[in-house]
Length: 144
Image 1 (cartoon, helix red, strand yellow):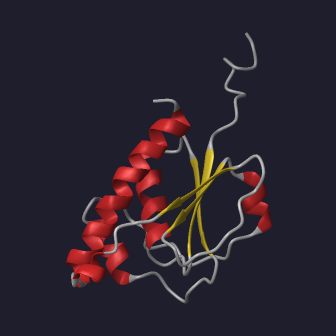
Image 2 (spheres, one colour):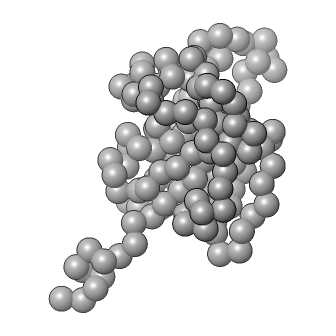
């Protein structure tokens, strides 16, 4: 049996980053965890972590059966940046330098508030935009 077939292949990993780590990056991480079911290691962090999660982000995931109530905003660390295969920055507020050898993407997510859409309606649109992107990323990282 070769190492590849013995399960010794490295589990793909991804870090989702936004500025406060209270909304978009938490949405992406929760959605990826639900989709991947442990087949991808998922981290989320913020460049300027806030004090708490956005309650509407939590509620919008709960509507899809994703529970992130135990999560909290965390800072981006070199340890996590060094450990992951992909870094995804959500939105344009968070600024992060790409690392050599690590896949790096900036997702300019839908911002319904620019169209006057607020509250839960806004959050569901943001969630659904991120969900579509997470599904595409999952397929790429997992080879499915």
